[in-house]
Structure formats: C-alpha cells, structure tokens
Length: 205
Image (cartoon, rainbow, N blue to C red; front, side, top):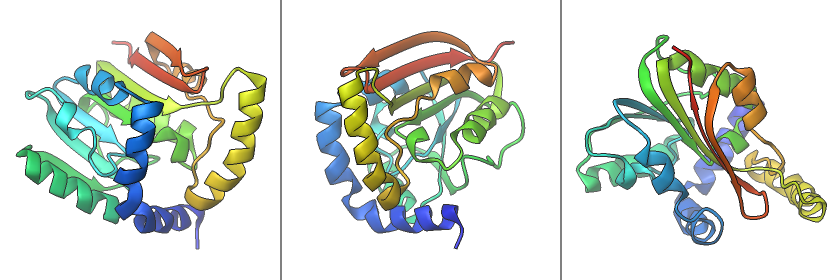
C-alpha cells in the first residue's frame, strides 16, 4: 500500500469524529481563522482539502465554489453540509499534489489546515500556483512549527504520534515554500506563540 493510500484510509476512518475534535481546536487555537480565510475569496474559488466542509458557511454569497479532498468519507459529510446550507459547490475526490484542473482556472485558492497533512506540501503549493489565474490570490491557514524552543520540542514529540495516525505534521511551515513557488506574500501573521500562521499571497500577473 502506498503512503497516499494509507493516509487516505486513515482519514476515511477518522471522518465521523473530525467535526467533534476539530471544533475544540477551532475555539482554542484557530478562532476566527476560517472566517478570515473565506472572507478573502472571490470569483472562481478552489478549496484544497475541503474536508467535511466546515468553511462552506463562511464564503461570500457570490463565490463560485469547487472543493477537492482525497477522502471520500470526508467529502460525503461535506456534501451533506453543502446541501443543508443550500450552497452550490462542486465537490470531487482529487489529490492536492496533482490537481485535475487546467492552468489558470481559479481566481482564489483556499487551504485551511490542509498543508500539514499532504505527503508532499511543496508539490501541493506548486499545483495551487499553477491553477491560479495571474493576479489570483492564495489564502492559507495552518498550524506550524513554533519559534519557541520549548514548544517546538513538544511539537516534535507530538508529531511522532500524529504522523503515524493521520500523516499530520506539526513542524512544517508553508511560508518559505509559498515564496519559492513564485507567490508574492501580501500578508503574513503568526499567532498562538508562533504555532498558527495566516498567509495571503498573490500570483504575479
């Protein structure tokens, strides 16, 4: 079994418990993050790692939404959530590291709490750059490695468990890879003792 298949099966198994568990962290660690990310979306919007669709209530009414995730079980919950909200959104199973869309397809790409779980986050960011139109916006929210040494030590210990369970890395930091991919960073903010980062960037025209 490949690493991608192993992680997919783990997330499928975890899907029914995800909303309950992430709700706690959203209140304590990521408060306001989903609202912040979605408020910046406009036009044709791609959400990478849409998960159970927890962002869907927060997008502007005029945004035309497409969401991808590699877990069918997570997508099933997202579809039910979208239906309950009355939102039209294309939801499909896909790999963030090889997005099934032509170049320059979207005005905005949003990824919240997803880059920590991709086997190759550099490939995923490059794909986000590819599918954005020139002048398009990338919006990211994620937990990252802290710049406080004691907290970082705890993150490294926790990571031994979370990577094995869900392929979830605690010590990544997407920002350098965003810049490496060719984005211009418009806004960057670190919160919660450096453990949470919000990034808004533009693909140059």
